[in-house]
Image (cartoon, rainbow, N blue to C red; front, side):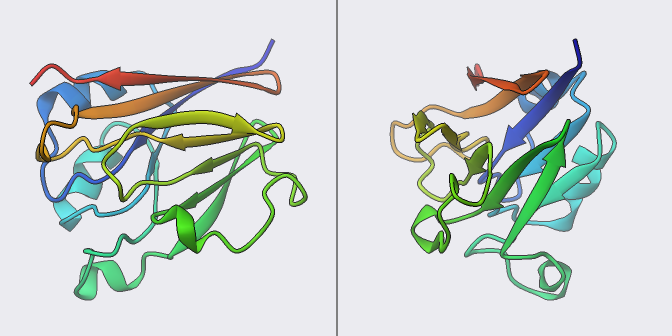
Length: 155
């Protein structure tokens, strides 16, 4: 059985908590769904594993110019579509053969399956917003099955 462990983080807004770093230990790649906040966040995450990031609506300046608005990440033969704001999704994920759609923006962790596609918002791992939890996600890919889990960070 082939197994991959993927870390999923979003909305760090310039803050990479030690609890997030600890929760991402052992992943083989990290997906950041935007609102990164600063290039230092990407550099710190790259010390853990390769990072595939997209630009969020607050990511501005020269450092963010090269970040794509959306991207497809292939892991273990499965395709994962990454964007920041779900409402900008302009394709049918099931028809496109995608296994998952990962997004951020709302700071609200969300996990559901629609038409065989995983929709995952890891929530915000950065500064706490209102009374929302501080979270990220991990996805275990076993053969072709995705097993996501939301991880609440104790902060």
